[in-house]
Length: 152
Image 1: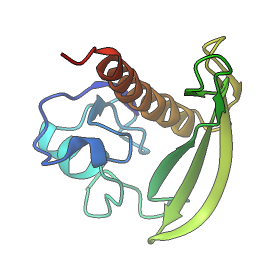
Image 2: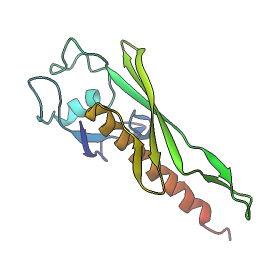
Image 3: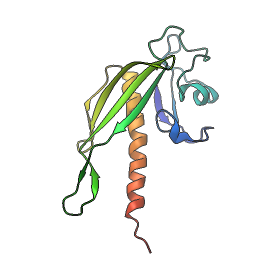
Image 4: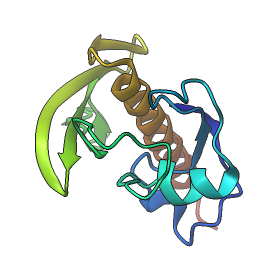
């Protein structure tokens, strides 16, 4: 269960991680609920999915990994003609078991209200979606700031 950003992990490309960056957290595996895995375990297993060689991972589980993608509807700003984000972000998730999809769906987040319009019933998946969204919005905000810098 992700809890806080993991800024100094040993990943070559942290933005490519399933949640858009590294996260520290605690385990939700039976018998280890609430325990914090070691840093190497979190780097090698928790942040990547497919942790079958992790000693804490239950042998019988519904899914091994979750992947997210954003469908960000855009619209034209009438006056400036610029493309801007729409009001609602659609997050597509896919739960995988043995590298095959076993569940998928959509979650919706209202950008203006900063609130979820649809949530997942599993609190673990919902928390991962929130972390992914946080990483996504952090990158999008940085891109917008870069775009506003005037050229000299």
